[in-house]
Length: 192
Image (cartoon, rainbow, N blue to C red; front, top):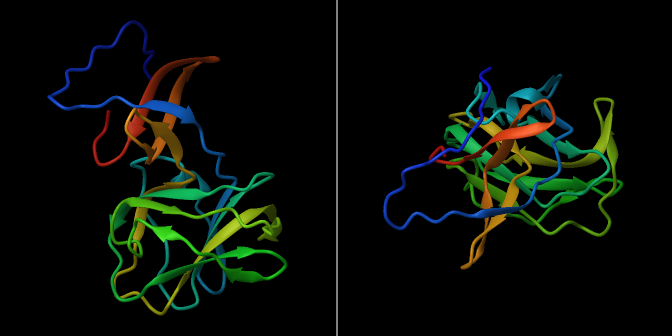
């Protein structure tokens, strides 16, 4: 709610590395949680870093869909609030049917903060989920979670680099004053 202007100085300890944002990931169009009967729109909750916790998966027939309209995407960042226990997670994409998506799961089945990434399949097609057309990936549980995983952010991640290697930020957002960005915030286990 405040207006941020002027120069900001941030005290940093030894060995702090600043990184450059090189690409902003596509915006999440929809985040649908499906409990086997009904869809719940979790788009707003998923896009607010550190916001209200929402369920990722719980029962054996649950699904969670992340969709971006008009563009494929290759990763999702997660800020896990409650670590999963009791089931594992597999991933699927749509190519006319829901098929397995090979991922690198940095969340270890929604047990830790991290990123799920993949190579965009060449046959990935848009489809409609609960009336919203987009390129979707979905998380599928192996069974019922003893502890249902929740998150306080889950959306396409942003890319940032330094001189050493390419890594990924969990989130990046600009606080706007009209059309001018006044403050940038990177969000991970630490807030900057």
